[in-house]
Image 1 (tube, one colour):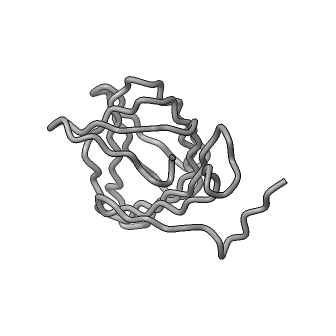
Image 2: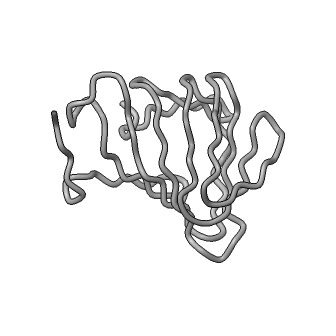
Length: 124
C-alpha cells in the first residue's frame, strides 16, 4: 500500500488556484486521482467542461460553484458531484482562502470555452 507523505505532495498553480496532488499514477494509484485545492480570495477560474466525473468536497470556506450555468453556493462540508460533460465554474467571492478535496478517475481533461484542452498533471 503506497503512502504519500504530505511533504511528497506536488503543487501546481493555474488560473490563480493551487492544486496539491497526492494520488496519481506517479504515486501508485491505478484508477483514481485526489488533490487538495486552495482557492484564494477573489479567484474566479474560467468555466471548463470536464471529461470525467469529479467529486468536489469543500473542507474550509465558502465558494460559488456554477454547474452548466446554474450557480450554487457551497459552505464547508458541502459536496458537489460533477458529472462528465458538465461545465464547471469555481469562484471564491470571499476574503478567505477556501480549501477543497477533489477526486476523479485517471485521465481527466478539461475544455475551456475557447476550445483549449487542459490535461492537468494532478489528475493524470
